[in-house]
Amino acid sequence: MIKKLFIIAALFATITRASPILKRDLSSNNSSTSYSLDDLCSISHVRESLPSNGTLLGIEMIPTSVEVNVAESSNYCYCNISVSYAHTGKNDTIVLNYALPDPSTFESRFYVAGGGGYSLSSSSTGGLSYGAVGGCTDAGYDAFSTSYDEVVLFGNGSINWDATYMFAYQGLGEMTTIGKALTSVFYGMSDDEKLYTYFEGCSDGGRQGMSQIQRYGDLYDGAAIGAPAFRYAQQQVNHVYPSMVEEDLNYFPPPCELSKIINATIGACDSLDGRIDGVISRTDLCMLRFNLSSIIGEPYYCEAQNSTSLGFGFSKRAESSTTSYQPEQNGTVTAEGVAIAQAIYKGLHNSAGERAYLSWQIGSELSDAETKYSEDSGSWELNIPSTGGEYVAKFIQLLNIDNLSSLDDITYDTLVDWMSTGYYRYLDSLQTIIPDLTSFYSNGGKLLHYHGESDPSIPAASSIHYWQSVRSIMYHEMSFNESLTALDNWYQFYLVPGAAHCGANSLQPGPYPKSNMETIIEWVEKDKKPSGLNSTVSSGDYEGEFQLLCKWPLRPFWKSNSSYDCVYDQASYDSWTYTFDAFKVPIY
Ligand SMILES: *[C@@H]1O[C@H](CO)[C@@H](O)[C@H](O)[C@H]1NC(C)=O
Ligand SMILES: *[C@@H]1O[C@H](CO)[C@@H](O)[C@H](O)[C@H]1NC(C)=O
Ligand SMILES: *[C@@H]1O[C@H](CO)[C@@H](O)[C@H](O)[C@H]1NC(C)=O
Ligand SMILES: *[C@@H]1O[C@H](CO)[C@@H](O)[C@H](O)[C@H]1NC(C)=O
Ligand SMILES: *[C@@H]1O[C@H](CO)[C@@H](O)[C@H](O)[C@H]1NC(C)=O
Ligand SMILES: *[C@@H]1O[C@H](CO)[C@@H](O)[C@H](O)[C@H]1NC(C)=O
Ligand SMILES: *[C@@H]1O[C@H](CO)[C@@H](O)[C@H](O)[C@H]1NC(C)=O
Ligand SMILES: *[C@@H]1O[C@H](CO)[C@@H](O)[C@H](O)[C@H]1NC(C)=O
Ligand SMILES: *[C@@H]1O[C@H](CO)[C@@H](O)[C@H](O)[C@H]1NC(C)=O
Ligand SMILES: *[C@@H]1O[C@H](CO)[C@@H](O)[C@H](O)[C@H]1NC(C)=O
Ligand SMILES: *[C@@H]1O[C@H](CO)[C@@H](O)[C@H](O)[C@H]1NC(C)=O
Ligand SMILES: *[C@@H]1O[C@H](CO)[C@@H](O)[C@H](O)[C@H]1NC(C)=O
Image (cartoon, rainbow, N blue to C red):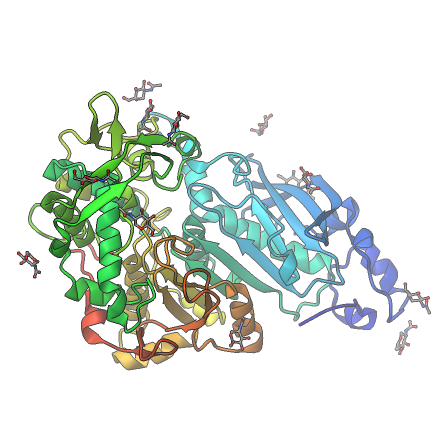
């Protein structure tokens, strides 16, 4: 719905809590009056628009904290609001920022953006191009400039639970609750006028989005969520798994050898999906049919370089210190190198052979396995990624240090124990795997969930496992096909062939979706249910090609160089299906 003008006659009947500026104009009965941004963007109007104490349970707004100014971002004028609130009886202070678009461009929408790594979004302006109000929260720990991992411990052994819950889900839930109330009064919306509310995010921003629809399902109408970093304990410890494999097999492959293994895998599996385009659109077929051992003996060569590719900077502090020198590498792929890749793609098992977690799809980069070169010893050494290392040190061992310094005396069973500890400790905060989305669904919520199939950070199978959990928990009484039909109306999942973590893959020039917000808005507001996910190839021989991605559980199979079918393949589906029997409880 596009609302260009504020029609006084309509407002007159329905406004229950009009602020003075609206009341003044109401009495003029001038049906052509429209409010300018300057009219509305005043301290007094914003204070009047705040939910009063007692209306939102546990939340007390602090009107004296309000600051406003008219600002501009990418040619959109907006009212920049800062306001604080306290939790009842707690005497804390949480700062919120909101960006409210000019009334002439407001389209009755509210937009929440996810952050990434250990950060919440610190920008309120992401919704302006959709005619939406946006907001962000400092979560009570100065999240605008502080990353959560910097405050998770007060000191060794002492967890900051307030920051943990605020980061995990509560901060965004309250920001949205308050923001929606503020928005409707600010613009003088009537009680029965819908304020469409959206979440968009990827990686931890995706986890943040999942936290919102799991816990505040009735606040959101639509969510476009990519590669969520949920199942947090398993996901974070999994970043250490490749190092553990290297330690266990006592082989620290030169990065060039792993790079060769990946390139050769892409070369070998490219055609299995029916088209040679440099993309493994069917990693399932690659996993079922390709034997990595066939790469043994192939030559590799990489020039000397300064590398900056450790993890992707979960911790702001670790991010700045990852440049390392790599000498020229010239050799042939070894049986040991292949054994490392095979073990990593197989996934973590305990010493009894029980599966603890899933892994990256074959053909994904092995980023977490990257060793570092020691000029002292002239050899390649263990290099625990900061992503997993910091998580284990701070969140599991509760030591206020930035990383794990070694894996001495650590076994696969230790990794499983770490996962277990993190699972129970943060089950109701960071874990974010509640599979019952009934409140979101019953509110009419629509979920567009996608994941790069060759994501080297968060395994694509992690998203599929959650999809399967939601399906089996919410539709356990239905047949498989009935459950697919039921889910299709509100929860659609898409694998993005070849794509990496929240973006295209430099090694596989495949499609990537760029118009997810437009898609979810049309689904929510115009009931246009997607029949596929709009994507475009951004590089390579097929640059510019449009692909309507197959909806899970269907998988693409090219029948010519220009068209593919979306097919159901039981062996393929089964290859994406996991039971984590290393744990005594079901892991959703
Ligand atoms: C306001 O306008 C409406 C419609 O034009 C009219 O019926 C009504 O009498 C007006 N009210 C006042 C107070 O002038
Ligand atoms: C109604 O409001 C518009 C815009 O503020 C103004 O230009 C117009 O003169 C007003 N008409 C009356 C009848 O007051
Ligand atoms: C609401 O509560 C907060 C915090 O207790 C307080 O600072 C504020 O003044 C209260 N608001 C009003 C309008 O009384
Ligand atoms: C928005 O308001 C905040 C808080 O008053 C201020 O720090 C920030 O600079 C403002 N942003 C713009 C673009 O005016
Ligand atoms: C609330 O916090 C403020 C500032 O942190 C402090 O000055 C004040 O004494 C506290 N009030 C209560 C009731 O604890
Ligand atoms: C793998 O392919 C990429 C992209 O074409 C290239 O940059 C890299 O050097 C290759 N690696 C090896 C070991 O040849
Ligand atoms: C892969 O190839 C190796 C070497 O030829 C062979 O020993 C192994 O059994 C093969 N693995 C599978 C699963 O076929
Ligand atoms: C790596 O960086 C060092 C220090 O900046 C520089 O001397 C060296 O030439 C660089 N090596 C390569 C291969 O880029
Ligand atoms: C790599 O090593 C092989 C065997 O020693 C040699 O023939 C080849 O020229 C080397 N390649 C480069 C680029 O140094
Ligand atoms: C916290 O533990 C680490 C690791 O044992 C230790 O190095 C550090 O000194 C401890 N910090 C404090 C403040 O005791
Ligand atoms: C690990 O953290 C320590 C400080 O806690 C730091 O000295 C060291 O450089 C870090 N190592 C890596 C590989 O980041
Ligand atoms: C998706 O692509 C189709 C076909 O090109 C097009 O009709 C539709 O408008 C697109 N939807 C969005 C949201 O971009």
